[in-house]
Length: 144
Image 1 (cartoon, one colour):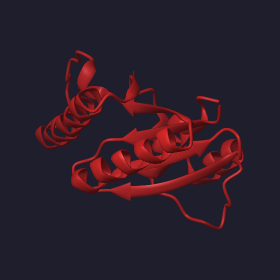
Image 2: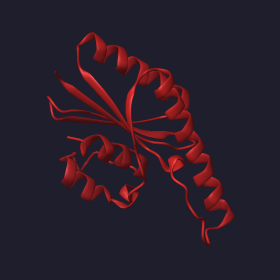
Image 3: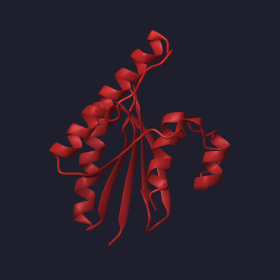
């Protein structure tokens, strides 16, 4: 059975969304707003079920851990809280629609540079990425 892994980095505006196929060793990087992300997930689930491929979603889940905010600014806390709510909504969608998924605690992937991301994943260095795409890509790719 072929294996497809999706990585998602939740964001208020556009979440990072990556699809990694183990059988073809291909990685796709996208960004979607919340409603388009749900549509893409459903399309991919249908496609995988039709082709008898396994599908696992790996969601960066800041919303699932209890944190202390320390000395962060009000703006930073507000942005984290908004992104965490998007993550929570994505998790509810995955559960409601019968996806196999994993919640991955934030582990510093957003600090990876474009160059390091390309070295790890063999992504074409000329095809620029942003932090949301890189996090999603690493979540999908590292699950090999």
